Image 1 (cartoon, rainbow, N blue to C red):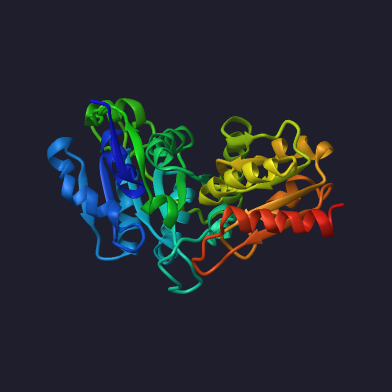
Image 2 (tube, rainbow, N blue to C red):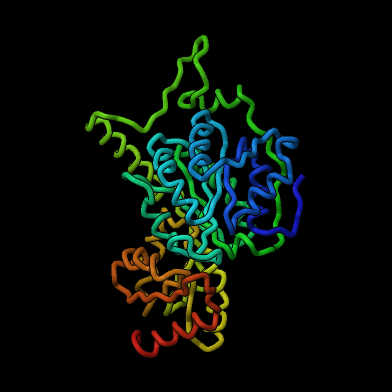
Length: 363
């Protein structure tokens, strides 16, 4: 049954994974996302729904287990944090190349290297610019609340199976570790093998039986022309994502003269900045990309005639700012404000940075 609970973001995601009728979770502990696998191990979903939960021997093993399970049409997820995702990138590229639906969760920590266990958004480039080898994209959802950590599990699986593609939920240590009230939906039953074959038997590896030929899944094609055709097919899917499944949120943008663009935890913090700025008589709005790919280019461009400046607020040294600049085609000046190393900016710091740009550069 549905219920309202006080939960950490990581725990809410794990509970939502059980309730969405997932078949398996393969992972490996790493701070600050270890609560995902810890919660699943405690809840024993194999007794509740028959879902498999397995701690692999490494991140590389976990992503290859995802590849194997996804190839059978099963609903499967893995989670990690920044260096762990780096280890999974080869497997993620294979998932994209083989057109397999799967969900990957990154609860981002500071880097590069082992970095820190504190929150960061420095995996933006890795997430939206490919990350692994070859021409591919990930559909990327960026939650900004514990509720979205839960809700985006279902959304991610819907997109993954719609396009037969891996989907990334890009969170961070703030959203993963914070506690909020979360509404949890009712349990969805797992598909039976018969239902799975009926829905996904045209492509999934479900065995050769009377009246049904076996499917072969691979990302390998040694003929250049065929490989080019495969890549073009993938590009058409990404174009369809941009046309049909781009998501964003606008806050007080109707009369805004200045705009903050921020996602995830930075967007939450920036909401308070907008409130503080408005009290000072500064007309500031917030545009929050919910999907980082596909990126909300058109909504940003549509706001350009009324804007004097844009501030890209990120927990990094400046990564998303490039997509903001490209979206507005440099018609509006765009500046960056961010903290790194796990330091979290405050609403007042963001407002100060905005005021400095307004006073010294944008007027």
